[in-house]
Length: 284
Length: 257
Image (tube, rainbow over all chains, first blue to last red; front, side, top):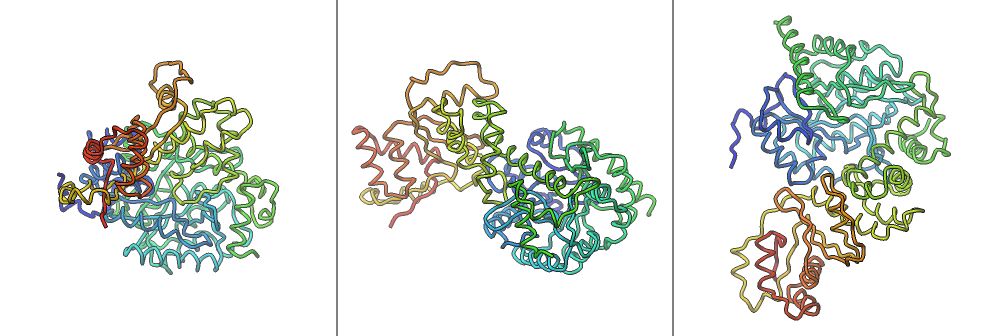
């Protein structure tokens, strides 16, 4: 029987670099236990039991864990899926994650899930709708969640406010925290031709509780958020600016396609860690 | 200006049907893309995500029919079969039967059964953990009441019967399998697919054992299970059956009225 040290129980990921836990790295992580701050998983991949949950529980004894969902589709104009929320709540009870997060997106219509992170029209109607859903989720789970900004390849003609104002307003109205994906901000800034600094400047500092970093692909016509590469140079630069503005925050290296050797993720995490420490040194 | 619901429903229709262009009047594409090109980026992502989910669930079928045929059939299946859950890991039920009706698949008569086997394995890996059956509580049941017992199978368990040698086909198409010729005339098989500890086992079982487990899985009583099993094999031994499947965890819980 494993006992969990008190210091790790329900621990909130520290303001250090962490990595996304992916199946090919389970055994190596557990055997080598590298010096990283925390781990994040996609909640849905642990809705079952068996090997994945066993490894997560073993690793949870050594690292703070964050549960990051991709399936609630908070902005969909449908009802939330109660069974999905129940599974998430059970997983939370079992893993005691320090953070629970979801995306600021929609992903289902009546009778059909699209299983993707789709951009909302930034309107008052969407704002009220998504805030009501966030409130419903927070009430049901009995805790605050973090909401992450997505990248996009279209926008809606009837957008009434810019995305950054929408994100800030969601945090303000619903009381949720923000998971700022710096790569997504960069990708969308290039795709929709806005200034990423304007975005950062609009985000309420005290709401930011986590940062995501990942790599994108150069598509034929726009940047594509594939999570299949190292973090790009302009995203590292934007990350430095984000840390300067929001302070040191738990920072995740995300990698979902063409998953590389663990050492590549650890190397990316080391770069983020160095930026976090430098900034801390400068601020102190 | 469309309502949130109208906007999303239009987007979803346009995603799966390129001829439905209603949503395009409401969209602006990124960079130099027009609305149609922007929506096409999402269409590609969506189909690619669902195809990946199907490849994950049906690796043997992929081996058997090849990538080109698989992807074509997958695209048609994705259009025709809405995802019912926010968790994409459980997308793909029924793909085998769909595939079998695609032109050109008819020669592979065993495809639907191999696909059912793969789906059972896929679900078994993802099923929840349960506490083992309380053997002490079972021991307290007096023998004369055994017939009234109702058992729940482990949530990962599936029973699959086929007139084709689907286990041999499945094994020959695993990543490290040696090249084997399958004799399609080798006859059928009955399988119990179940996760034991962390691995999913594919266990050939006898006709009477299969009948007993299938009866229990349908929530009938142990008395009924004994009857169906003995109809298949007069020598069926209920004591051995119970001992074996309680110890192995196939029977995960029981009730008695």
